[in-house]
Length: 407
Image 1 (tube, one colour):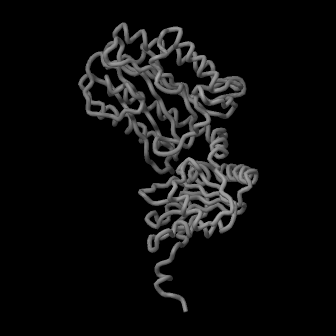
Image 2 (cartoon, rainbow, N blue to C red):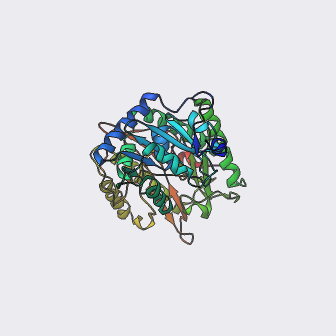
Image 3 (cartoon, rainbow, N blue to C red):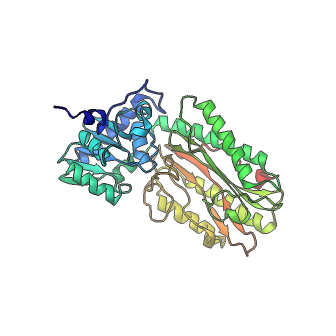
């Protein structure tokens, strides 16, 4: 006899509510990604892949989850592609996904892993993400799936994401234009006495309206601005404050539109009203390094070699000691909320060779301590698509003193 409470309170179910929504890309894009993934899985010898990160789940299915302390997943086998989502989301994960979807319930602990096992099976060779799966969840994976072997797919999936399709580049190109819209809105809002938060909101609001105009069928989330002034410019990721702008302040404009999990950015050094001679010297040197760095971004060049050349450029000008991080990074399904493509960054320890179809920034930054002439953080940032014979700069907002002494 069937237990009535089990029928009313199942471990999992399929709730395909409404119609499938428009996704960021056509079905053929997701089919191509999954075909390449399955080839990589076959090479790794895996029978199933269990993805837990926001970036890989979004990349292969189109669904960007909101965890709020609950686990989410995507299980890919030779024949199936299924997202695993919590009951609190109802039918949205299915509607916003190229994949099938199973909803797990809260009625019993670890129903998430029971749902995963219903697709991945038990006793197989299971692929996972070593950069994301926690120790606790790894233990549960082993308990519920009982894999004979576990294979880390972090590296191979990152390598796949580093090479952009034509459809991805088209979206990134539009997103870079949205970042420019935010930049112009910020420039218009910069005035002595204005607060960082008010200027940041002007840029964010302009971008969100532009995204809604360009992508009327999308979901809207996570677009943000970091607008920093004075001492607050010393770190690239310093949060916005209520500090009021003073004449002569160094400013840092940073706009970050998020479109269907795809991150882009515009970053510019600015000054409020006027710029002193010491600051202008450092700013112009950073702009020169930015232009030199962009000229180096071409197929066949390695990330490490490019980094060493820009280091030498700064060292000749006695400025290398003010460098704070790498000179650029990949773009695509990434943000400060979730993953990055760490194999494509302009740093000394990255030997990746640039290839057509990669998308990368050039963003040199110099930070001068507050007790020195020219104090503050200087940063320019453009996004470039690597082409067959060079690069295509898809950032349009001007950089340098001529345009960016404002207010």
